[in-house]
Amino acid sequence: GQQVMQIPQYQHVQEGEDFTTYCNSSTTLSNIQWYKQRPGGHPVFLIQLVKSGEVKKQKRLTFQYKEAKKNSSLHITATQTTDVGTYFCAGPPNSGYALNFGKGTSLLVTP
Amino acid sequence: KAGVTQTPRYLIKTRGQQVTLSCSPISGHRSVSWYQQTPGQGLQFLFEYFSETQRNKGNFPGRFSGRQFSNSRSEMNVSTLELGDSALYLCASRPTTATNEKLFFGSGTQLSVL
Image (cartoon, rainbow over all chains, first blue to last red):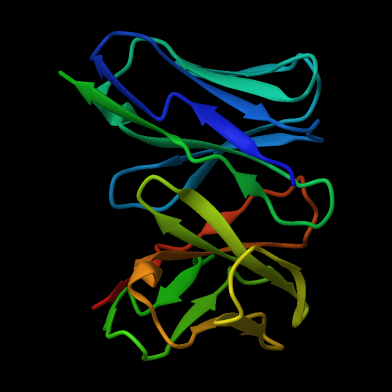
């Protein structure tokens, strides 16, 4: 079945450094969604990418959907302590309706 | 609008017992999905209900079951609990099952099996 993989699993950065997490699917995705889960919280939707090559920005966050629609990335510029959490990507399966989530990248930012 | 509500927030059970978790979706949302979250395993899909019908099921044993009521509220049941069932169980709702719709998650039920 379809698999969604994320790397790295963990990332520890100093405040002000950049951070990137990568999402790879074993099959082409019709769309990809990104979620953030703060420690002790629940996943919260960040953004959805639909078009091949699409790039979207939310303040310091840049989301990219690669040409083959199997890969995506999230880049955070100049991290802040408020960026701490786990970032998940998710895509719809080839059949069915539910979203398949990657295992997430946990980001720790130290001041 | 009120968000997705899950009850109870915490639950402690012993092996062999059964448990029922409840989820009330956002008003107007007819799809409810359940996920199991354990450290290092991310979010693993359990099942999704839409209009009282199970539309999709993940790779979990038959001890895990669910249902949805006419008001879209959903319950999840786990029978014959095992230690490995200890996890955060998250419920998420969306208006329909369209794959381009985002999920709205509840705060989850933290289940501990002793």
